Image 1: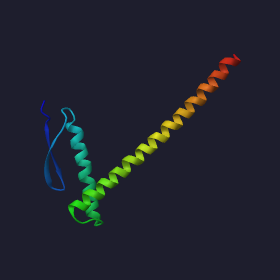
Image 2: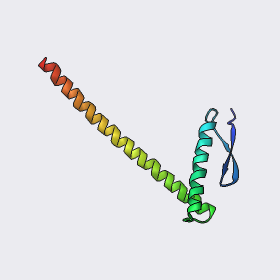
Image 3: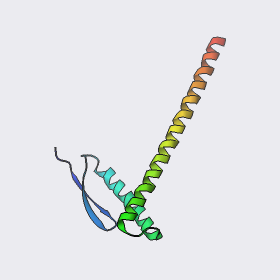
Image 4: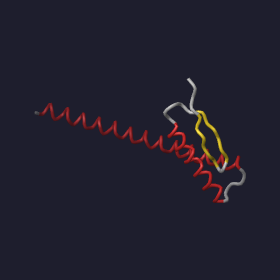
Length: 97
């Protein structure tokens, strides 16, 4: 089965990217996000050159992703602890009744 090709534009340069069928919208959204981040970095003047802009943008996005994962794991741990406390409290209530 052939994968569809999606045309995206990053910093004014066109790219045709193979994509699993049914995920074209997600790829376009990701490309748009990447393009926006790269444009903002370029406009800030903190990085010059396409390669440096791409690397710094990739590092920024990766940092955000890893931070989000740590936050999600922390929330999952808190939820497990609260569930355990709730189970314990319900168990004690059942014994008292």
